[in-house]
Length: 181
Image 1: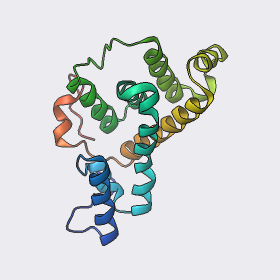
Image 2: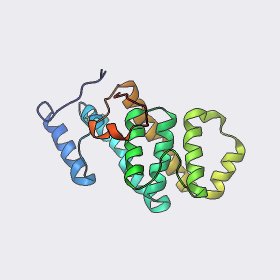
Image 3: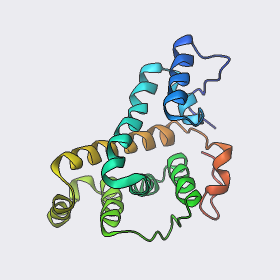
């Protein structure tokens, strides 16, 4: 059962309705369970929706596929059902196998970094930092790490808040995973 309230069109404030409309107009899609939950407090919603701003900054440098692989690695390592399944859907719908993706060296570096950020953020080896420095400019590293932090925060919100998985994502769960939150 969910821990946080999930707003609906019927009980949203005017400010929340405006924020929801702005989100849909800018990025398309729909108001997911996570967004409906965040709309209970518009400043929180706005803070978390900055994820899209960082994503849009990354795409020209690394591409949408790499952003999705990086996001999936972080979310899967964090065992965030909502986020990991969301990115599984993107990958699967684009013909990818999220459990065994065929990746470039840079994409593998991002996948490994995403998992290390979650698993042991204080223990990332110097050799790994050297690979990141060789692959990505200083400014891009800032954006990547800020994005990763936003992704971890989103994972935390969904997991601790027990935000339920949107029904449209049920078929994208890992085989045998029947969780809904």
